[in-house]
Image (tube, one colour):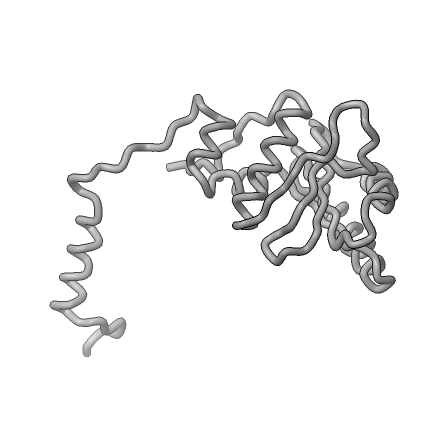
Length: 182
């Protein structure tokens, strides 16, 4: 049976929805974090759409790229250059994209990031669509606010935990040995 994480969910059709979805997803992943959209349309954003603290209270920024195609290295480098103007205490810039994983780009970004960190600059990471979805499904209410047409199955209170109780009784009766008696 497919899970929400394994489904090919429709990607947002506009950048505004994508930014909100990414913000909400990463707030679920980084429990206790507060992320804020940077500015409004028409204002210079210094290569940052969303900023705030991650789960370790480090200042992070996210640049969202709604794209049907692969994300190019040139585009990522341009965003890194823009984010240099954002804030000196920035620890990581994430590029969030609706594109699928790209091993070649990931390797190049890992090398760029390592070189930047060695020079005392912020690191760079990529957030691909499936990772964003995985973070979004951590909270049913938040997920449903972005995908109201998809519903979670209702829990059957009558049978909830029944299988676990039977398994525990069997384990208690037969013991916990994983080896076969000869």
